[in-house]
Structures are given as structure tokens and as C-alpha cells.
Amino acid sequence: MNVQPIVPEDGELLLQLKQGDRIAFDEIFNRFADPIHTYIRVRLNGSEEADDVLQEVFIRLWNKRQSIVIHTSFRNYLYTIVQHCISDHQRASKRKRYTLPEEMPERTEGRPLPDEQYQYKQAYHIWRTATNKLPGQMRRIYSMKNEEQLSVKEIASELQLSEQTVKNQLHTAGQRIVKMLRQVQIFF
Image 1 (tube, rainbow, N blue to C red):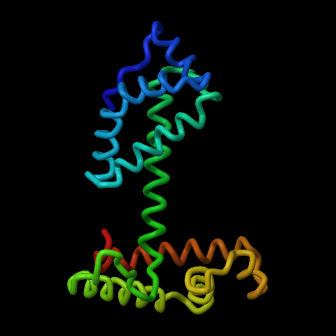
Image 2: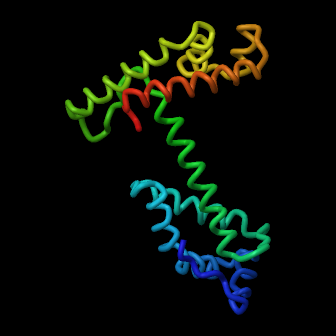
Image 3: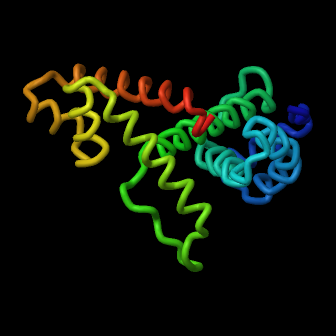
């Protein structure tokens, strides 16, 4: 990430940011947004969602402005925020990918293209096949969580299991489904 650290004479800018100065925030944004955006796009393989992640970086910077403590450099502090935002985005994307609703989502701008319908149905069928290959209790727990939308606590209570057992089963189920999907290379 080719970001210029805030040099000592710019310490005043950081101090102003900590005090909630919007002009100081705008100046920091103007200095760092382009290189951070480029870095995010590279990390997300050119994803269009890089804009959203960039926005999240600066939202977090603004929200944490009063508690900023710089141990090494502002560049490192900002890099840490960027890494956390990328990781959060990637985790959220994975969760969305493996929770497919039974019906294809409707488009507001018109009917889905036939290719999109076919691809969606194929992906849903493969996901459904992968979930059906899970062992009995694991499949039941996964189904209760993802199809019935029950909480871990509700599942544990209904099946008379500990919450940790339910969490472990869900984690293992997710890993097995991902492994099966990788075998057919549907998402990876």
C-alpha cells in the first residue's frame, strides 16, 4: 500500500481529526483514498465492491477518531483498519454465498435472463445435494439454522444439546459443504 505516513508537521491534522474537524477528515481522505482504493481492488480481485469497502474504512476512521492512538505511524493504523474491513467484507460475502433461498430472487428491473435462471437453479441444486449428504443430526441442525432460521440457543433447546455442540456441528457442516462445492467448482 503506497500511502504516505503523516509526517510530524501533519500531526496537527491528526489532532484536528481527533477533535472532530471535518476539514481535517476531508484532507486525510483526499491524501489516502486513491492508494487505499487501489489496494482494496487488488485484494478483492478487482471487485466492484471495493468502493463499499473503501467507504467502510473511512466510516470506521471517523467513528474511531476520538480513540486513535498511533504507536508506529498513521499509515500502519490506517492499514490495520483496511485489513479489518477487507476481512469483514470477505466473511460477509462467504455467508451470503452459502445461504441460498429456495426461490430465485426477483429483479426490480425485470425478469431474470434465462442464463441467470439456469445458473441459479444449478447452483441451488448443487447446494441442496451437498446439504443432503451431511450426516443425519448435522443435516438437521444445519437445516434448522439456515432454513427455519432458528438461533443456536433455540436449536440446542429443541434437540437437547449444548450450544457449543450446535456451533461445532454448524461449523463442520459449513466446512463440508464448501468442500463439496469446491469439488464441482461452483463458487471457487
